[in-house]
Image 1 (cartoon, rainbow, N blue to C red):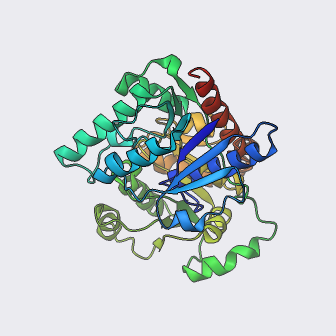
Image 2 (tube, helix red, strand yellow):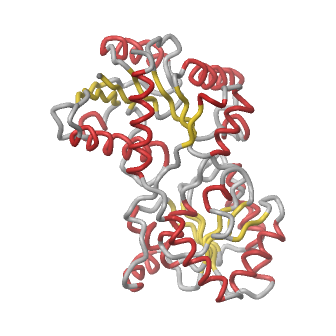
Image 3 (cartoon, helix red, strand yellow):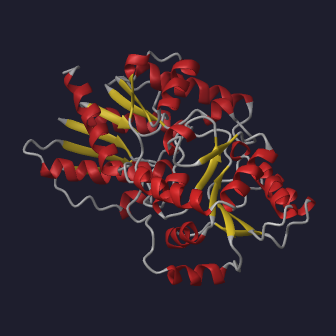
Length: 379
């Protein structure tokens, strides 16, 4: 069997669909190498990943595509490459599939953020039209649709009209590199680099409107008024589309208490997870939500939104939850955990056990089974 995988979003960095695709491909190649009956695997790349990724397998073929998502070249050049390879089935880790592609495929839907929280990007009418048409077309023609959570599965049913029996939930994994450090002193260089000298609350991730960062900052201001001796650390690349993050800090005069390290590397991220007193995840919507699980793996208790997939992924008993639109409730739950050492120990222990259940290998194996079984149905 000849299996194609769209690798145009592909990255070994620690977040997003790129990491999902990297883990999927890496593990599928390993499964295939260990199998008695080996399949041919065709990987469709853009530069520079086409050149940099070495599959180290004679059963893997790389194809250079160089077609961006939502582009004309995606509809023409990528389509030609797909048709030329004539794969028995292709897996798309994202919904951007050439509209005229007619051969069997499966697709992963990570979330419906652009449907529910379009924000300030891709908000022109033709962008919105292209998005809605592309994602509906992708799920309608797919042999199987993989959702990364049951909440996302229900969103796909509700908003895209996809039949329930066509959708399979397969959870994401947590990288083994996220772990409790044996020596807390390992975190010191990172803390010194970013000027972090107090106990701190941590948020990691992108800055977009559904991430709800202004309310987190407002809740932090309440905690300062209540006398909690904390800093707030917010990682991620500052986004000019969302100036309200830094504007909220300025308006509340919190410049000395809120620290913006920027986009940190994986080692520094692990240091921050380990060193944080509490991890706070105020998002209004997530298709899955990896950061709370990564924090749990690093031994830090979690306070998070009681919305979308977050309680499902975190587990109801492994974190404290708040309504993300209620600033006072965010502050109350953080203060409750801060003042209760027994609750901290409980959440740390339960969180470590819970987060250990999420494996990239298991995600890839189940996805590979879905890809192969949907080829056999059509062969």
